[in-house]
Length: 530
Image (cartoon, rainbow, N blue to C red; front, side):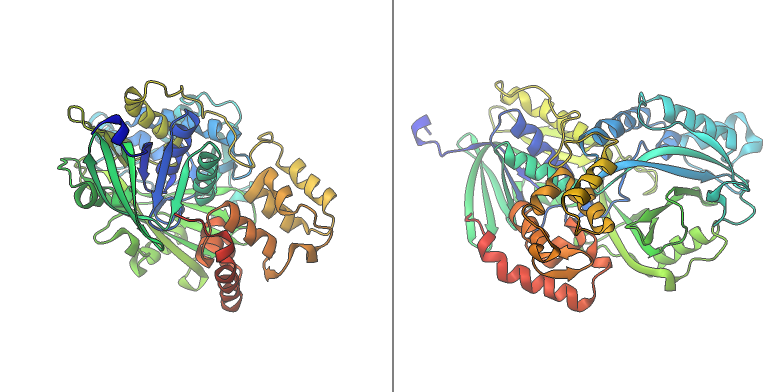
């Protein structure tokens, strides 16, 4: 095929609208590459909206000697915190100490400790936890987050909800993140830099043809053919299916699907700190204040068979989390306390680990570029904390094929709405209340947390609550829904109520139906031709 006959082609076609796909799209577009991203459903519809919502170093990963992953994750916490202070903020974690704490017996640390201190077999002593927290405080060059300290639970407020047996604890820092909003904001920033983001577009085939990738997508408007000089498979739990059924390329790499389930209960404690609970089985769970009125408990680690979209929190997983938490809380947590459950499938690189808990959380990037054929980059594994670094690593693999691509640029660069100081949230809320005195404090805080400085655009021109249009309940207004549809790719009530927000926890069935009906009626005004 001559140059005159070559179809117009993008530099990069990305399959998958999760955090890795959208992170790579943003990075690549900012380097001057032309980018198309296709997502079969909604952005963050899979694993990226089903996390524990933490930017964290992975304290438990130290037991597996994953020092590079932990250091990279710790470094990223503050890098990301500065870039998105509306959707990410510091949190303090209370780790109660108990003689009942145990290792997973197959971890490298457990085996080493058993070898040199056989009388400690299976135990996770306090001094070892403190050593791990010292590494946690120092490996990542911490500057913003407070350091670890010891707590007397008989005097500290954090001890009040716990059983009297827990008298001591360590308290350390990590960060919260609104995971699905993180994905949407990366997609928006990618689009602002020239990327084309397509939701509801399933990739049905991708073939190398004439020195390019020929990619066929299918959506509501039928099938379309796109061409690109490189292809990125960021399909997450579906990545193996993309290799097998879409590109039809032989690959020896395997994905291990691990289901992580969470439960949301009524609020179990009054303070704003989180708990890191260690179990007698060697596992850990978190108990985290959630959406003001609830507590998030999770997560499990179970190998998952079947379609990733079919992942559900089973009764056994729910009961496991309830029993685990009840070993710590003075008042038992029961299934009557549960208001919602969710489950996601982590696409871990299959490193042959004997259990789901031990499988590596590190990422693997596999480049397939035989001869002069256009390259394919397959993304395996990863965690939400390291998504930006994964995107940089992906670009390092792809950059040799695009010598005019710019350098790395994303570190500490604000996402949409994040252009204010990392400690400036309260000032942002005060500004919203000053300029829009009809807002309740809770409404202003929710808008600031979701949209940052862009909350002023949603509220622009409003002199009263009525100016925001219909009130659907729980402070959700027509103005906000229209913003989600016009700017954030939302198409259905689930997109708006469970991914762009978590207002599905607060709205009644009738209110949810009203949201869906409004969005369906308004959809033609926001439809884009594909």
